[in-house]
Amino acid sequence: MINVAIDGPAGAGKSTVAKGAAAKLGYIYVDTGALYRAVGVYALRHGVDTKDGDGVSALLPEISVELKFIDGVQHVFLNGEDVSAEIRTPDASMAASNVSAIPSVRSFLFDLQREIAGKNNCIMDGRDIGTVVLPNAQVKIFLTADPEERAMRRYKELIVKDPDVKYDDVLADLKVRDYQDSHREIAPLKPAEDSVVYNTTGNSLEESIEKVINIIKEKTNG
Ligand code: DC
Image (cartoon, rainbow, N blue to C red; front, side, top):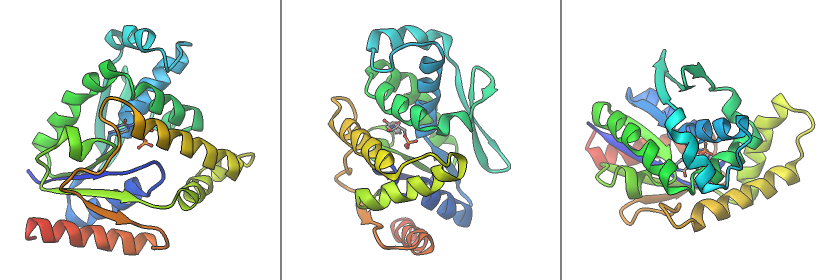
């Protein structure tokens, strides 16, 4: 199987770029952030502090998270319920970042990610795909962009659903998540040593997809 790992901070455009590249190459696109978001949403629903390692760990035996690909689009199921929309709120983003620092949550989601990559040509995006989940991926890309540009992209996505969203709040949340995701003890966000680092600041979506496809083709002689 050909596995492409794309890691990088929130709002770097990983999911849009990975989705576009996967569609053109005929690979499946796997968004691993959705798994952490589903666990975060479960904890929020049950009133458990998402930073409380013991509290969140105690919930794990009650949780089943599945990814299904419907018409090529990933849906995430939490105990059989499709929560693909609910996991996209700002509260779910912060909850995901919080629970993702808990070691038992990371090991809970590890096998599922490995299993999907073992069975499919895929582009998998996340924070630790090239460093921990798929250390033998044929292609590793670290996608990033300046925080202000990442916050503006995220803001434009969120304002469509909620007209009260403030750019400054989005930027502040993003900086908190950047810090948490890259400073946690377990599987922190960082470029794998053998990754290609690509900063998309100022590039259009089409340019970024094109560039990522070229990196993949180069590395896989495709
Ligand atoms: O990619 P995303 O914004 O949907 O991810 C949500 C959170 O989940 C992110 O802040 C950190 C965590 N995450 C992680 O720790 N490891 C991954 N492979 C993917 C996401």
